[in-house]
Length: 234
Ligand code: 6PG
Image (cartoon, rainbow, N blue to C red; front, top):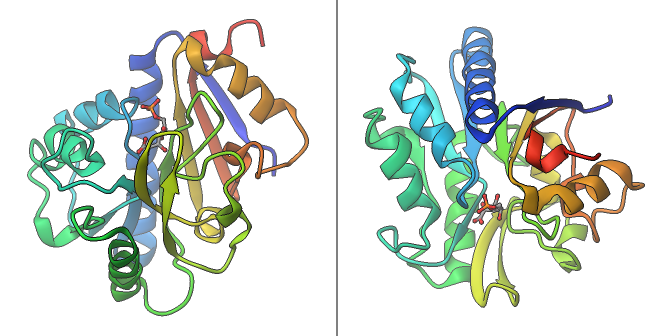
């Protein structure tokens, strides 16, 4: 199925549309199965989406929240994706801690990845989890989650999560793996900013080659929420 590509005037409009679509999909999943699962990315782009989501009157009952990836730092560190998520969404929306499943970035990376895979399995049961919604971003180099171009773990389609050393960032990360990203029911990619334009053109316009363009990793319901700056001249 071809991805749906939606372009908005500015980052806020893209973020609000992505947030609203997240709510719509979570609501539908909860109606169908009694609960819904959401995995969210970090970095800087989704912050305004999380802030918008926190301001809405959404009923978070039965919504289980996970992380797509995490930098290996304690949860109060300025690099921590969990910290950003907590400040922008979990705290303001008063989402009960029992519904939040974070990567323990404070642990040694391999332990953090193993603990996270177990945490995922404790909610989904054995085997690869099928998330209702995975919200992803993309770096200016075409990476998504913490799968960077050239990363050999991109070939792993059976694992749930892994710890990786990201040379470019000089840090360890824990990330969900490709098999999980491909199995999700819906993927919402939020990408904004002129610095993403070149990579976005490559990712959307080149033949499938996830080792070079990890953001090409796709699932059935694949939707892109872009701003004009990331898309102009495309
Ligand atoms: C992270 C993310 C990552 C992110 C991209 C885009 O930990 O950095 O989860 O995969 O989606 O790097 O990041 P920006 O939004 O900061 O550009």
